[in-house]
Amino acid sequence: MNKLAQKFTPDIGHKDASFLYHNNTTKASISIKNVSWSLPRNGQPILHKMSFDLLPGKVLGVVGPNGAGKSTLLRLLYRYHAPTSGTIEIDGINIWKMTARATACKIAAVLQEQPTDFALTVREIVALGRTPYRIGFGGSCGEYDMFIVEAALRRLDLNHFSERSLGTLSGGERQRVMVARALAQEPSILVLDEPTNHLDIRHQLEILEMIRDLPLTIITSLHDINMAADVCDEVAMLKEGHLLGFGMPDTVFSAEAISGTFQVDASYERLSSSDKSLLIFNLQT
Image (cartoon, rainbow, N blue to C red):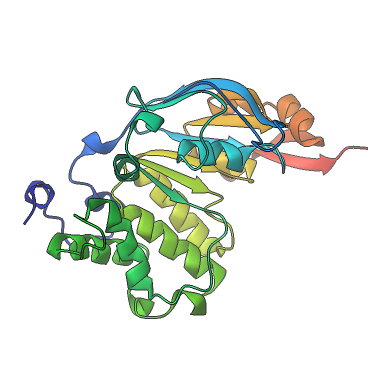
């Protein structure tokens, strides 16, 4: 048993995703300092300079219309793109000063589009989340690695088709597999690009509940403004590559700001059944 396993002996039947983490110190802070990104081939700016800080364990929702730069910002956060200017720091360390392996042990990403041609089983895909912890090229999974894989499969309710090929699954099922792979990675930061895309209502609610409950720092892009307001501690609203607002949802999501950002007529309506305010939208006339 390795040192991590000695710290952590979870109940494999437990449904709460937090059992994948040996303690609550896995949360990490993120600092975005004057970050921008332009297309390398012609210098066209896609993200203009922006700065914000996210405390450990907080959930950040990134919202904005299509083409606002949401996915580009997420790619910078999980080190797919290097920023054209500025720095991205995890717990005060520039991610581009870290090794790729060290970064992979800190950050896991679940992308919006999933491959369909993998000749791997669901279990094998989830086991890829353990890759940063293996010793040497092509290192095999140990007993603790497989324990974590089983835990992730159970949490996402994937056991009953764990031996099926990824290509035989629906889009929503593939999304759940990729979330399980990310959890098996035991990251400090989880980046999710439209995690509820393709999911039915039940699994959307399960993913949102998991986001709220995980002892991680989470950054997720969302199209649904009401969903973002409900699940996120803070939100970043983008338009045309500019950061228009950052802060708590009830501050950033004013009806006026939403109307201007999305080119709709937005207003709040209070629901008598739950006594909650809900944004409603109409096309501008």
